[in-house]
Image (cartoon, rainbow, N blue to C red; front, side):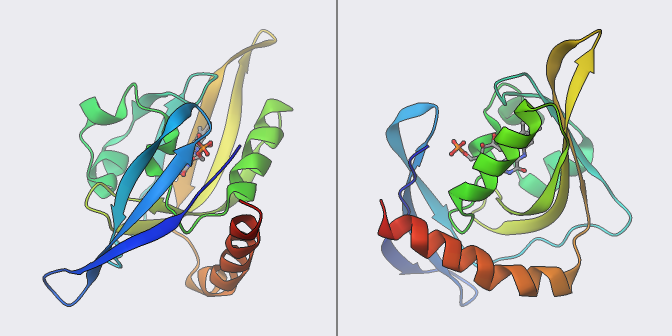
Length: 171
Ligand SMILES: Cc1cc2nc3c(=O)[nH]c(=O)nc-3n(C[C@H](O)[C@H](O)[C@H](O)COP(=O)(O)O)c2cc1C
């Protein structure tokens, strides 16, 4: 998987924030896509769970209401899209390489993920991703996200930033 995160443009955004343009490559797309981020955090609702299911290639097949609401995409936009629609440029590629290697072995993966919203903002989750296996056959994967622990996010931010810098230095 190759990943390029290139901060190209910063423009003022109403409310004091700024929009940053990024060029990203995705493992299943030979081209590049431009995405825009802001520093607006969408807080994970108390007591809620974000649930999604994918096919064996990571294409979204189910999105619960909380997922639709926090992500900003409609259910129609999410269903049929690759789960990488949520990939935030602050996330190191190594996290997803570990996720896929783990679930392809048939094991559950847990970890903290910073996700992109349609409006360019973000939300943090504590995610569990599980293979759905019935009668020995892989049907796809499920993900259940819980409200993350703020202390853990503070601890992980510099770790993810260092991993990302390392990846960029080899790009
Ligand atoms: C069930 C499931 C849930 C996933 N959830 C997320 C997610 O919340 N955010 C995310 O960026 N990637 C998620 N992924 C990983 C993406 O499929 C993808 O690997 C990742 O966004 C990196 O993009 P890339 O593989 O195109 O480089 C999930 C994958 C699966 C199978």
